[in-house]
Every structure is written in structure tokens, then in C-alpha cells.
Length: 186
Figure (cartoon, rainbow, N blue to C red):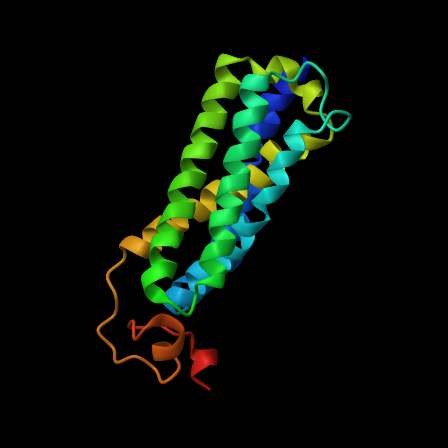
């Protein structure tokens, strides 16, 4: 099997275990969480995207990794990670938190789609060995990022429940209606 075929198989199959895990363990909990807490959990995962700058480190990636892929992937991840961190820092200020949640998700999705586009145009599968240690990012990490962006947008678009806010919601979410898990009601 060629390296390009192996890379493409890895790329596609990287989504399968994350979708299974997400559907069984993560999504059921996110749906029951308060809106702010659910977005906070997703932002926490995406706050680690500063790590994407590793695409620019010689010795970590091969010298023939196309700059057209590496530069955009690195800075797109970095911007998304910074926006996610800012959202986490602004959690107690809903007028700042919600726009930052939308921003990090929009920037993050655009980054991933453009990375897929660049990877296709630049024939990244044929150059998969140039990814070096970063090979794990598109295979293991990116599927979870894409899945959580979709979940974040779904949760943002979902109508708020009509229930009265719990006592702590005013502080954390600016009085937004909440949907709490049975364990958080105790």
C-alpha cells in the first residue's frame, strides 16, 4: 500500500472512533449541560490549538512540507486557540463570551476546511511523511475538532429552554435559561 493510500485511510477512519466516542459519551452530556458550560467544555478543547504552530518547526516536520499547507494550518490553529482562550477568560461576561464562542468556532471551521482544501490541492497524502511528528494532528486530533465545532454550532442554534434559570446561572451565564443534568440539580 502506498503512503498516500495509508494516509487517506487514516484520514477517513480517524472520524470513526471519535464519532462513536462522541455519540456514546460526550454528546449525551453536552446536551444536558447548561449552555455556557457546554460551550466552555468545547472551548477548553479548542484552547489547545496553539499547538498547531508546530507545523512551522523544522525538525518536527519535513523540509518538503508545502508552506501553502503548513503556514495556514499553523496560524489558523493558533488564532482559533487564542479565541477559545479569550472565550474562556470572558465566561462571566456574556456580552463578550458569546461573540468569542461564535468567533472561535467560525475561525476554527474555516481553518479546518481550508486545511483540507490545501491538503487536496497540494497532494498532502503523497507527502504524508513530511508531516513528521505532526502526522497525528490531522489523523487523531482534527476529527474531534471538526465534530466539536459541529456540536458547538448545533448547541448555539438550539432554542433555549423556557425553564427559569437556576440560581447560579445568572452569575455564569447572564441569566440564560439552562438545561441541567440530573446530577447538577443535587
